[in-house]
Image 1: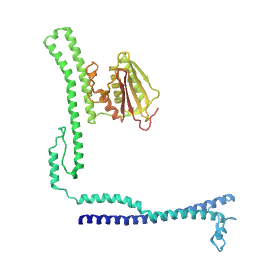
Image 2: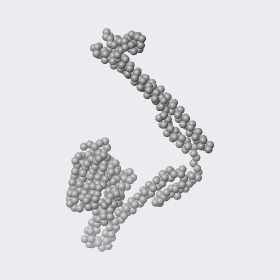
Image 3: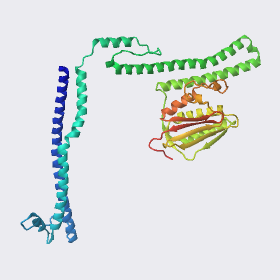
Image 4: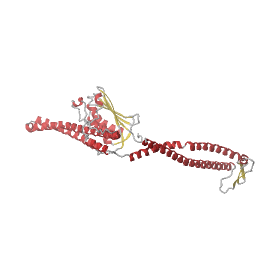
Length: 431
């Protein structure tokens, strides 16, 4: 009970202290506010009086001069209103009655001052309440810091935590820190979240190495097979020799492309991939891709739609590479004579949208969410001669995300696919 009473006493003491501090702060602020109000009203009265004098002199046809003799006279009357009403302003050989103007200004300022004083008094009486609310949160932080500084750390807890961490293995799928101490629950959750991310990274790394090995194994086996055949008996057969040379060249080119893609992704993951954005005309870039595609692929019909030019901050080589990947994929899965469209438009968020659409075989719904994963290919793609390494879309995704953009994909089997690159425009877009 004494511990509880002590905590209550300390809480009551802190509350009383915060109230006193809030009242002191409110008092100092109220005094400053009062002086500011009086100073403002005095300045306003002087400014209005000076303006009236200048207007009066101007209406009387007197040119402004600092040396002009000016003064005010009045008659002392039984009451203040009559005294103010008798005031006369003299300037040079002219004069004008000040009374009406002075009474109006004095009345308006008196009313304003009364409202200001009411507001000021309200702040004096109730102003400490919001101050105390702000101090309450600060006091809570200070109390928490005091509790942490006073609280000792049990050596047994420390040893339990150390033993639990020593027995962790991030490579184990179900690796988890379990201390069983409610005081350390927050630390336990943070460590487990870190372990989960480490395991996911470890799993992705293992899968990446396995997939890369699998992709390299096939061309190496083909090259070794033809080299062995040539070494045994094929070197003297011109037909076999030509077939072997052609196959070796094809597989060597495939390996070259695959290695370049792997190096691109590896440099990107390590932050060593060169990225030099500049102002780029997206219409001009799409026009170049359209012309190149027509030249190298006469088996498909390429269409270009650019209602307006959009200029974006982008790395020209990288962005063009990502669009080329989409166009190449569209060509692979679109039958001869099919249509591949390239479009440029603005999105709903005023972002630039580069659209590549085909009327090819389309993508199965089960494969849509995986198409940007590294080495992912649908069974249909793996079994066809058009199936690549499965790295193209992963590279395109890396490039677009490096530009701060994202993809949207719409596809239906047998109807075709539309993939859109969304690029945010910095500081608007030039046209």
